[in-house]
Structures are given as structure tokens and as C-alpha cells.
Amino acid sequence: MFAPLTTGMNVADMAWEVKCREEDMKQRALENERRAIDDARRSVDEKAQQLKAISHLSALIAGFAMVVMVEVQIDDDIDAVLLSIFGLTTAAVIGFMLIAMLNCTMMLVAILRYNCVTRDVPFQDFWRMRCEEDFIFALRCFNRGVPLFLCTLAELGWVTYHGHGSRVVAASIVTGVAVVTLGLWMLHTDRKWGDFLLGGSTAKLYDPGLRDETIEAARQNSERAAAGGRGTRGSWGGIKRRSG
Image (cartoon, rainbow, N blue to C red; front, side, top):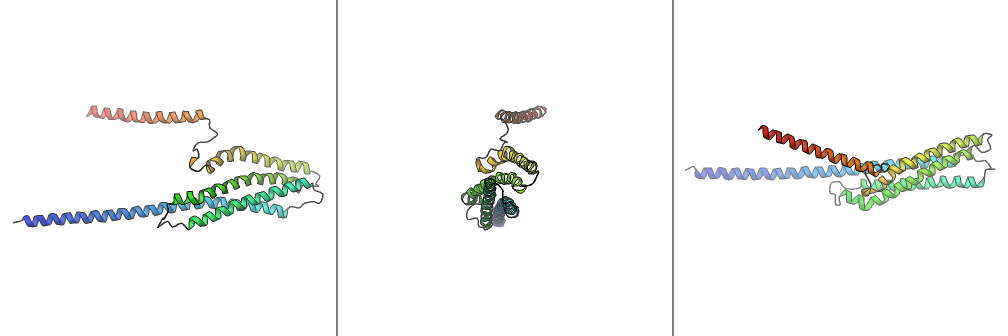
């Protein structure tokens, strides 16, 4: 007597479960799509911040070099070789920094046009195929421009203080400061971060100043610590089993 009613209720329950499962799948798909959009936007924002940093600093250094070239007072009897070298280094600084700034600006405009909703191409593939080579080129130009800017600073004292009675002492101090700064840049900053930033996916994650023995020892210590943790958990599990 109640068999048809029970069958009908079972069918209704199955239909309700199927409907709930379909709604759950739709909700999960919607959440996954939102997560993918957020990930793409974060990737675009990360690259945009990197490009803005290089572009702004390149423009700042290029502006300093241009002001030096325009505002410096040059005597008529200054050595022609010194003047030529000064003009060459200053123009090279402006050229390198301008190329870095323009490349970063173009890449910034390009990635801001990337559609994070449709994502016809994954952003990582878009960056690797369209932007990474120009990004590395801009970094190389920036890395070449910084030492030239310091060379310009070293030459500036001899150009500015020409004809002054204490020009040798004053110019030597300026040159000494520039040389020390250049040494710190070449031996520490560029040596540590230059290859890492220019290496892309092949960049080493450890400090190149560390010896291989130190890196190997650190890796072995990490492996021993991980093995010790697993042994401790295993011993604790055995104790619990015996206690049980």
C-alpha cells in the first residue's frame, strides 16, 4: 500500500541530491573562476610594481645626468680629453636610463591591457613570450647606467673645480667617494642581485657569495632535521600504539 509512496519519496530525494550536487559544482566552478581572476590580477600587479620601480628610478637618474650636463659651469681652458670623456659618460647614462625607462613603460602599458577575466593566454605565458626578454634588456641597461653615473660623478669634481686653487684636493675627495660607491656596487649589490634578477627561472636562490661547502652543509642539516622529525613522530606513534 505504501510502496508507491516510498518509491516516490526516494525518487524525490535522489532528484534533490542531484540538484544540490549540480548547484555545488556550479558554485565550485564559480569560486575557481574568481580565484583564477584574482591570481591573474595579482600577477599583473606584481609585474607592474617591478616595472614602475625600474622606470621611476631610471627616469630619476637620467634627469640627474641631464641636469649635470646642462647646469655645470665649464671653463674655456679645461682639458679637451677630460671634457670629452665627461660628455661621453653623461650622454651614455642618459641613453641607458632612457632605454630602460621606455622599455619598462611600454611593458607596463602592455600588461595593463591584459584581460584578467577572459585570459585568452595565461599571464605567465604572456609575460614569458612578450615581456621577459625586454624586461631583462631593461635591467641590463639599468645595470650599465649605474656605474656610468658614478663615473660621471667621479669626473664632475675635476670639471666643476677646474681653475680653483684647491681643485686637486676637492676633486680627489669627490672621485674617492665615487670610486668607493662604485666598488660597493660592483662587489656587493650587482654581484649579489644582478645575476639573480637577470637569470629568470634559472636564477639560483642562494647567495653567490656563499661557498659550496656551506650550502651543502646547510642542505644536509636540513635533511637531518627533517629525518629527525619523522623519527620523532614515528616513535610517538609507537608509544601511543603500545599504550593502547
